[in-house]
Image (tube, rainbow, N blue to C red; front, side, top):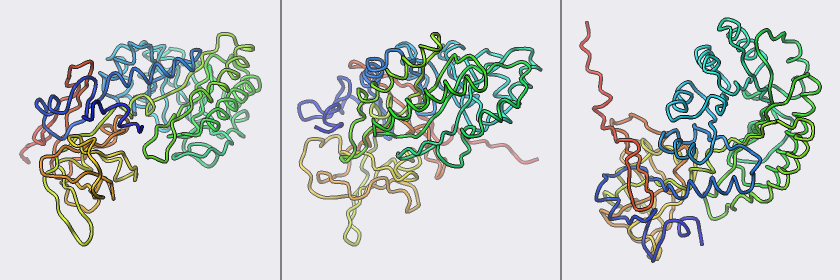
Length: 421
């Protein structure tokens, strides 16, 4: 049984957290995003079951909706943020300063000043120059700063999006880290830990486990060579989810074997060290669906097209990252496939085709189409104002109830009609 059928089909009909399609469409106009609260909770529970000694830092960048962040906070998550807006969002939701880590390759002085001033757990530095900037701001603020070192390791991972192993805008090169960091005379800052994020959308559990083991050994070595008390290791994350039939579920139990060994090794030397995974996609991707209406169908030179009222402006990932999301006609979710279809949106560019040769039942005007696995980097990476289509709503389904967790914004919400002087 595939992911869609397992989570969103009940008695041959589409269902999300006790709600059927009619209940969803009777209250909300397409296009919109809808999320399953129960699935987010289940994914968090799976992480805690397999990694009980690790803190789970929710990566705001995956889905910064405050209702989702608040839910995860209530479950016990911490916050991984990458901008001033995300830091403020984390505080708005109620995350404590000591449960916020700030990572990002090009932090501004304003962002770092705010982070230090509000006493977050650590600013994760990506270069020696950034460490100096953090320390200088700490001196000016007369408030000590806690710094973690992001390391661009010498690993060679295999995944969709690799962040280590070669020249990178992310992190301090592993082979120069000791020399470059020891050369910095910190005045008002303390190095408290190590961070390394190897790859995103990782599905190879053995490779993820190897990364965990590698980072644990490296962190212990750097702490000894540079000379700091290891108070936190952020092993990154990048836990992936299956998008296509060829993708396997990530084996958390396999990763846990290496995670447990790493935990024992680190805590034997630094008993109070905080161990962390930063997780976004794994928590929210499979819970989200981008929903649109079929406006019409057409045939063109051997291909059949579905034209929907939502596309690349509201859901950019399939177009710009060439990600093949599972696609279903929600009102015909259990009906047999009759052919393959291109799924296009309303934007006046040939780029706006979100699915190619997707097998579906025969589509008709008024059908409802769903793009699954849209809960991470869906809303947050989209929202183009091209053609003034406006922004869609975000909706949470939870135990038979629907809540609007972000209102739709028509194009006129963004008009600025200021006469020229």
